[in-house]
Length: 183
Image (cartoon, rainbow, N blue to C red; front, side, top):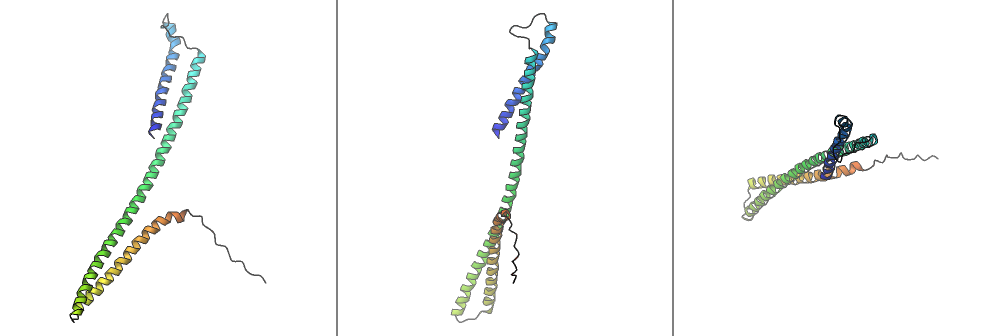
């Protein structure tokens, strides 16, 4: 990209020099009529030289316009690509945040469940039936199952998000009607 900018700068500078040369050549006949002698080392420009310089100037302007258009197209493509990548990154970040949230929830529920099961086992070995511990253990197990399901859903959403563009790029095959047996 910086190479194109450098080329564009050099072409613009060359066009300016050519333009100044053409202007100077166009002014030379008028200056020659006013001044009795031409400057040392300066030869009057012939009409053919002036035409050649104008043609070269026009060719450089066309080349400059083409390069400018290419630079503009490359910038637009780069901006479009960057915007698409930013959207994908945002979606991936959101999915990752959801998956992390569900994993934290799952770890917390499993830790609570393990602690309640330990308390329940201790109460049972002591010969005590603690209904509130049983109730809390059941609630913790349900929360653990819900958290595990949430983590699985977040993981599947990530997989589906990654597979979506791949599936969308596959060609669709139209279903064929079954052939009827004619007897």
